[in-house]
Length: 194
Image (cartoon, rainbow, N blue to C red; front, side):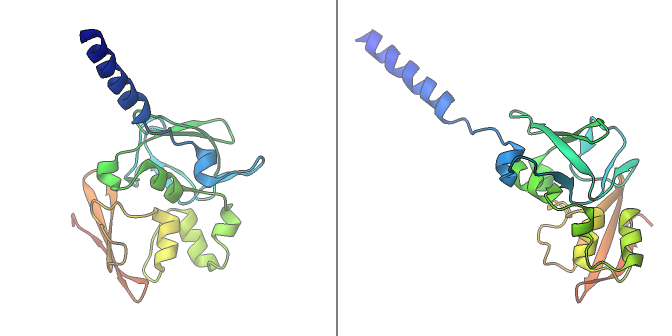
């Protein structure tokens, strides 16, 4: 009787461990990539340490420009860190934190990478605005789509609903900037530490 009970407990534990584990996220499945398809950054990604890039995209240090072709390495199954390299072989690791982004790692990857190259992403963007986006800048008059190309999506911890007229971004770990929109255009840029 005890042997059957122990066997039943072991079977339940093994089923919970094996059956309850989610499949790891992988780039080809997320984007449904075919052989030969390429991935690119969807917006400018800032970093001070390429192996420790924060998912809040704090605008400090160096920048991986929008439309940079990348080669996915992996999404670590336990930490959900996103690893990739550029076409020059430099490796990067984004430290994903669902508490800051308030989304799944799958959604974060979809928000951060795309199958559209730089020209496709910037199609129809006026030259003056295109130059600002490629420098990682946002200026008054840009629309929300153009802001997304330059800064990426705002973190939901500060901007829970992108339908709001105010989006928040970090320009340093201590400094926040508020973008105020009116009729889909940036009307005001407010540095909250000034």
